[in-house]
Image (cartoon, rainbow, N blue to C red; front, side, top):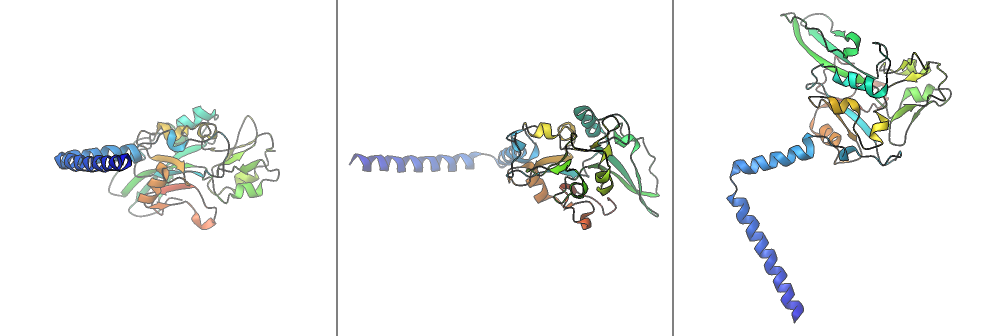
Length: 270
């Protein structure tokens, strides 16, 4: 008997809750509803957080890290390249860059012009735009951390390798400086470290993502043009970004299966 009373009480509570919520929603102005939705949408998708890309500290096949770049948002400020240099102690010089920015200048006639003074680390000098220029835009470049990396295939000593979570790294203790990987990379993303005499490249700031932090270039971007995350997690901001933007990869015809994705990229971008 007591059980039947308790069941009826639970049913009454459920009905009361539904009536309360129905009345509450009807009482909220439409504008407030939109604002509330916008707030939670921003919380879920508009801003990356440490928890979105948190790693266990050990490589895991459950993770598959990648990065996307929204070219329409990049302003060529160079903060990403500068942060990368400082975070990873990359030697100074335009030919020692783990990530850099290129400016594309599309004329109304003739070939596309591309420049990258000092890798874009200091920004770009103003260029007078006249009727002969259709448009200009900036394209950040980096190691594509290919799923089918040619650099790994050509390394004779196994110094270049792919982690379980999809990041391509270089073991300095094994590298013999043969430069085979530099020649094999179709994206020009590798260079010889002038002091260590070993191959060097972007690592997605592996020491940071292993602790649940974002890569330095992503963290400092003022326009959130770079998006980092896990391709295997639907909750990742990267997964959401790839779903709702027109995406292409560079030199996809080479079947390297790059994991640096570009949104709003013209075919001129190579």
